[in-house]
Each structure stands twice: as C-alpha cells, then as structure tokens.
Length: 622
Image 1: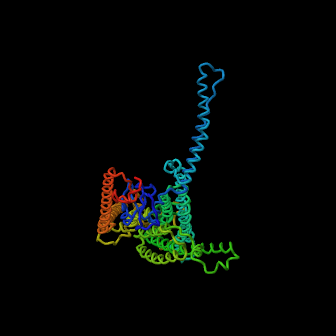
Image 2 (image 1 turned 30 degrees about the vertical axis):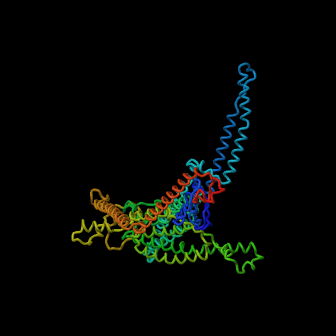
Image 3 (image 1 turned 90 degrees about the vertical axis):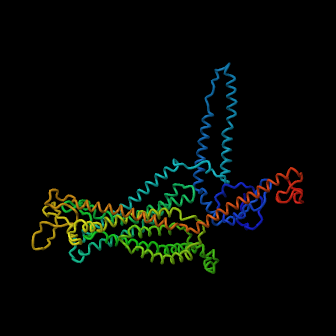
C-alpha cells in the first residue's frame, strides 16, 4: 500500500494491494480519507485504495512510537556483542583435540571422517562473519533490529540504580538545605534575642521569618534549574525506546524533584514546626546549644501564610516572568555576538535588510512545552495544596496568568523560532499528575485545617468543656502549668520579669498534667480527645470532598451528550460505508469470476467494470 502526502483527495487512485505496511498501521485517517477508501473497482483480487495522509499530525504521531536513535544504537551494540560471543563459542567448539598418530586400524575411517568435518567447519567463521556484515548493512539501511533484539531490565539495571541513587541524593540535598535554614532561624533568633535594642528584640520573629523565606526562595529557584538538567541526564542514560516514553520519564523525574524542592519548606512550617520542642524543663536542643523553634502563641498558620505567599509570588515574578523574557534575550544577544565575531568583515552587509529565515536564525530554538506545563503544575500545587492557609492564592495566580499570557505571546512571536506543530491526543502524563495533585490537595488541606489551625480545638472546647456555650476560657484551657523549681540547671530564664513578686508557677501552651498531679507533665486526656477529633475530621472531610468530586464528575461528563451521540453516529456510518463498499466489490468480483471462464479474451487490469466483450479488455493479461 502506498501513500502520498502531496496527492489531493480527489485525484484518481492507482490499484494497489490491500496489504497494509506495518509502519502505516498507526496512521489515523480522517472521515474524508475513509470516504475515498474502496472507491475504485477491483481486479484480480487487487483493491484500489487512495488516501490522503496528514503529514503534519498523524505521521508524527507514528514517528513518536518509532524507536529513538540512541535506543537503536544500544540495540545494535548489544547485537554486535552477542554475535561476537556466539562467534567465539563456535570457534571454541570447532577446536577439538587431535587424534594420536599411534592409533590405527579401526580408527582410520573415523579419523578421515573427522578431518573432513574439520575442513568443512573451517569456512564457518568466515561465512558467519560475512552474514553478520550483511546483517549490519541491512540494519543500517533501515531494517530494524529492535523487533528481534530488545533492551531488558538487566541491560538497564545500572541506569535504574544510578537514577534511584541520584534522586535519593537530590532529595537528601533538599532536606539538608531546609535543615540549614532551620539552623539559621534558630541561631539568628538567639543572636537577636541578646541584642540590647528593644525594637530589635520585639521584631525577632518577623525578621527571622522574612529573611529565612527569602533564602528559601533563592535556593528553590537555583535548584529548579539544576534539577531540570539532572532529570534530563538521568533520563538519557536510561535509553527509553520511544520519544513518548522519553518525555514521560523526563516529566516524572523533573516533577518529582521540583515538587520536593518547592514544597518542602512549606511542609515543614505546616506540619513539623513546633511539634518537637519538648516542654519546660525538658526542651529539645540542636547541637546541645539551640532550642528547637516554636510557633507563635497563635499557631503556625499565619507564618505558613507568609511563607507561602512570598515563595509563590516571588517564584512567579522571578522565574516565570523575568526569566522567560530575560534568558531568551540574553541568549539571542550572545548568538548575535558570535555571528558578528565570526564574520566581522561582512557585518555591515549582514546588518542590511535580511530575509525572514536569516532573522529567525538568531532566535532561540523552541524547547518544547514541558517548561510551560511545569510552571502551571507547580502553580496549581501552590493554589490547591495549601489554599486553606492562603485563600488569596487563586486570585494572585489568576493575575499572574493574565500577565503571563501576554509575555508568552511576545516570547513566542519575537524571541523564539517557529515551533513545529505536532498533533497530540491529549496532554499525556500531565493529566495523571493533575489528578494526583488534586487528590493530595484534599488530604493536605484536611490536615492543615485540623492540625495547623485551632479550628478543631475550638470546636472541642465549645461542645465538650464550655460551661456557657461560648469561647470564654478557651485560652486558659489550652495552657498547662509548670513549677519553676523543676527547671534543670542552666535552663531557667535569666531576665527577671519585674512583677514585684516571685513566680512559682508559669503557663505554657500544651495539653499536659499539672505539677501537683500524680503523673505530672504527662500527656493529659484533653490531648487525646482533641487528637481523636482531628483525625475524625480528616477522615470525614476527605471522604466527603472525594464523594462530591466524583458526583460532579458523573453529573458533568467530559464529552457533552450531543457530541458523543454525533461521534457514535459517525462511527456507525463509517462501518456501514465499509460494509456497503465491501459487499459491492465482492459482488463485482463474484460476477467477474463467473463470466471469466466463459470468455477466453483477456481483461484489462485497470477496468474491471467493463464487460467481458468490451473493447477495453482486449490485449490485457488476466
């Protein structure tokens, strides 16, 4: 079966065999192409097929499933090694021990037979080498070895092991940087607390939080670029078979590393900060010198809101907007300087009015839509994962996208070369990532509401402990008592409070038994009641939102009903068209077969519709 992308759909079609080339089986035909399928008559069991191939879309979809050049090179290398090993085994099998000359008589005939077999096998290595050379030539000519020889998991095991170790190392680097920022916050807070200025000591929390968030933002932007390059290198050493597989593996690795890099500081503030600080008299220290940092008296929700807003807005402003315009301009300027340096004599002539292709040559090549998708996915995570702590995140994301639409339009028109259009069935692996983030957002927001905020403790106090049905006395309920005589040596506060009286009992935020209790400073029953309510809220909230999401998905289908009915109708018409054309051609073939033996006159292969006595059938070979 032959195809021509330049032949118009209405042109006459040459008779071709009804055997599809395997490489063309994956090409998708439009309804206009199907209409011309089986259009001409048949002759001698040969069908006339004419179709129009959309080279810009369908053929490139087939090319995406074609093995990559790197994969074919690895397969060829594996085949060469395998063939060389087989050749060595054959040579070792041919070299057998010689028969002693002392043996005679009955062994003479066997010796002669073995010598003949040895002479016959002497030509085997040369013949196998010649066959292998011919095989390599045919492979390089286009006959693919990937159908017979494939890369197994044993061939890819070193690459898989390198990927696993590299990803674990990159994630460990991210955690180490977050730990370094934590140590910075603790040490800076301790240093500012010893300052003699009252204004500095009163703004310790704001200063430490703002500077730490800025450090996190700079580190996130830098590591994003590094992780993108590392993900591409790790994907290359895996040697995926097709371009589609290469893109999916690259996207997964890049998203995993950038997800950990972008959200780890936020996860720390939301779920870990202030959870492992200990209690008065038994604090947790880092390096035996610095106490673990605590949340503000009102909780970590406000600090989470500040950190999320600074990282989200800074990342969108610097990385998504300034870098998208500045980096292409800088690369364009560098390429212009290189061209000027290469031909300084012809620079004046070159600066004259240039053709469009000459002007486009200095532009930055189009690198694909993966960075654009990655920006939207990370922004979607900022908007959905912690929206309970920063409700204005969707508004800022909308404003950023309105601005970025115009910036991307300017970038694509003036800064980048014209991209090659490729038809795609859907957005690929990005859809699965979006679904995963959506489901994870429900769980994370449930934990933020129940554990990070005071929403659940307030409800527990209101319905279980309040005497008059109000929130009066809630703060006192969340505070525990501590006897200052239980301080360890060197851990008591040095600054006197100047209250005019000696303090014996102080209060701190926690659910613990009082010092006069039998089990002093142990976890109280109120803590377990609040914890049970928090976990119950997480379970109910998660299942309720998931049910509502599935219900809305069922009520509002992805494809409207009228369009789905139209698609079904088109499929039915297509099948009816094939069946009708096949039945008509089969009837013509049966009629021609019945009349054929009665007439000895030859028939034309191009005019099967003409009668057997017609003038067009004279002179044709049957």
